[in-house]
Length: 264
Image (cartoon, rainbow, N blue to C red):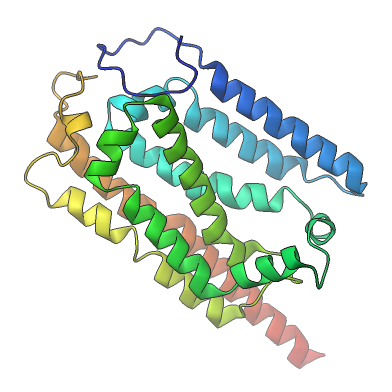
């Protein structure tokens, strides 16, 4: 029995497969979130944010997406990256209310200072970009995805990268360090890092990942090179959309707030 999705080299089948490690991790996450809310006595529980994050993790890590991405299709692997960094990451931040974050990191404490530093643009940007590029190197992907521990490490790293990316944007005001234009500039800079692996995939004349090149084909006429180019296009064209939509929301909210202050 496999506890976590990893490349096996076996021919693809649509027969359902149970990955108990995925379900155990998600169960522990739900219990931890519920116990944190009970302990902190949240007056309002962000159920929608947590449910969205939990379901996103389930879809991303479980069968069939998890299995396809782990050892068959680079394009699905890229989809996992986008879901973990651009959807699950910010949703998990929002699943804890601002008062909850302040109870976890009281003002003036070491944890509060750490989260304040993480809310600055440079640490988040450098950490996110570095993790994205490192986890898309062919040597890293080919080595990691063949073991359950390595595949788990990639998934957890992407989730951490999502937290680092979104914390300067979604952090409560007690930790936030960016204004409207600073946030928009930060978002623009964040779109540049994934461009490197995306262009590497799109403009390569041959599959750069031996894992996906030699993997049994899911569809006979969908070649490894076509899969790789789709992965690159997905990372760049679809991956930028949530960030630019966020930039638009930040801009309009900021201008509306300034207009209300002038009218007042």
